Structures are given as structure tokens and as C-alpha cells.
Image 1: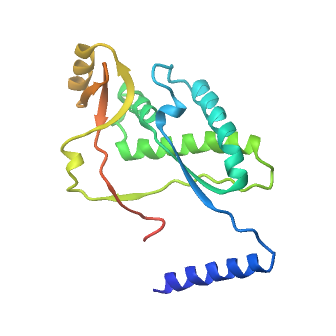
Image 2 (image 1 turned 180 degrees about the horizontal axis):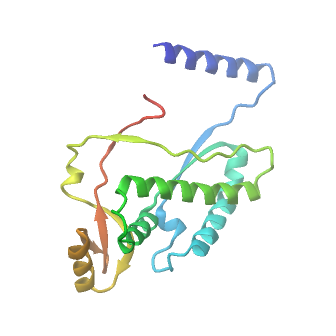
Image 3 (image 1 turned 135 degrees about the vertical axis):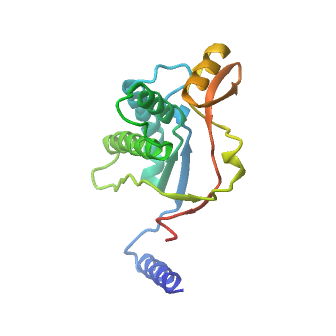
Length: 195
């Protein structure tokens, strides 16, 4: 209740400021970029390619960010899959858990998008990268039936299945190719918003 009262008070102050001509309220827009928007299917999974695609996305998003309070969210399938492959290759320590790899990719993608947006927006425009923690239900059926494609594509089914068996992964057909799949449970809440 106290949080709702504070939120209502802030909203009231913003409306009063706007009515007094002090602030022009901006509409909030949410944009979702798929992970493949930043690393396109079939494109080598390089930092240069991701930077180039982040630059293209920023060019399209900058006018929207100038006109509206903009929240950009993004996928990370190719990126987290690449990190998972790198983890498997380094055998000196146990592989990092998938949630940590997801956090790494959130930071990396946010960093690149923020840099490219800052290169296009006025210096006074606020741009920030936020990593979110999401609570999921441990009994979500997605854990038993993974469907979220991550990582590179395999043209050869036999190689995909051999890698999956060797690494303890699940792979599924993705169009005419094969990819690793991981669980994608429904979010219950974003912890930064609802402690």
C-alpha cells in the first residue's frame, strides 16, 4: 500500500508539473529485439557482427527514443548459446550455470546497444542498461520440455545429436536445421519491481 501511495504521489506531481508547463510527459514505448536481430541466422557469431547489427538497431530506434520514453528488451539465444559452447571448451573448471551466462549476455548486449544509442542521441539524453532478475516457478512445465533455441545452428542432424549427447544438451529441429534448446519458463515477476 505504501508503495502504491508513493507511485500515485509521483504521478500527481508529474501531472501538476506538466500542467504548469515545466515538463512534457512522454509516452512510454516498449521495443523487443530478438536475439537474431543482433546476430543474424547464418552470420558468424562475432563481436564485430553483433556491433554492426546493434548499430543498425540503434539507427532505427534513436528517433523513437527521442520522441518517447523507450524501454528496449532483447533476446539472447545466439549469444548465450555461444557462451555455453565456450564454457564447454574450457574444462579447467566446472561450466557456469545457464542463468549466469544469461546475465553475462544481458550485460554485453545492453552495453553494445547503449553505446550505439549514445552515439546517435543528444548527450543530455538518458540511456541506461539494467539487468533484471526474474522469478519463475520451479514446477513450470518448460523445465521438462525445453523449447528456447540457443546457440549456433547445425546443418547435420548426426553432429547435433552427437554434441547433445556429449554435452548433456537437448537439440530440436529448427526449420531445416538443428539447435540446442533450453527451458524458457514463464516469468512470475521481475524482482527489481516487486521485491
